[in-house]
Amino acid sequence: MSICGEPDGTPTKYGVAIVDVVTGLYACNAILAALAARERSGRGQHVEVCLYDSGIAMLINVASNYLVTGRDARRFGNGHPSIVPYTTYPTADGLIALAVGNDGQFARFAETAGHAEWGRDARFAKNPDRVANRETLDALIAQALKRDKSAAWIGKLRAAGVPCGPINSVAGALTDPHTLARGMVKTVKHPTVGELRLVGMPFRFSGTPEAIRRAPPLLGQHTEEVLIGELGLSAARVAELRAEKVV
Image (cartoon, rainbow, N blue to C red; front, side, top):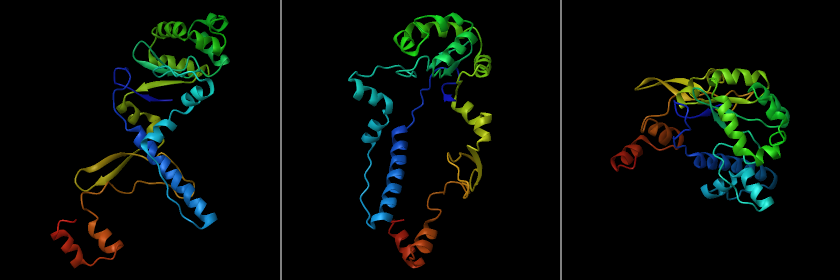
């Protein structure tokens, strides 16, 4: 588990167009589903996605909680609405993320944090009680974790089987050994800047391995290749289009 933040450990202020990206992914899935339907029916169909619908769909469990219970959601920052402790906490030198998913993990976390009594405390022993006493427990955990540095806590907690991870800066995330081992940073040759580093592919194929074979094209770099080679226009027609400033 690795989350991006500021270099000093404070939560990130970087803007990410996450709804735009997710809408593109939904569009891809919808198109594939429509193609699968065409194989059965022989008929194509119109596929529609929009940013608003994607934003609503991204509410996932938060939306379900409201629709099932009728209770409006609260703001919990990085926290989970119905699992505690499941959020970010300060340490002596930054922040770490905890994902304590059940009562057994909480007991191990409490012991590792030097407060085994938390696991026996009626306010915290069971997850519904931890949710009800979220603010109290969060304050106790924050105080306890400030005694040591992030790397030390991560080592101890992972050894105890407690899911956790560092809050990385963007630079930290992109230079993390796990990121590099997963091939999520690639280097390609660029015609003007030389070696160019790019984010790698977030999916894998067993039979047709993914690859980034070349750099993003320069402006107009493949105009002739597309218009003449793919669309069949003549060189004279492409020259006319250039003269008319169409391309």
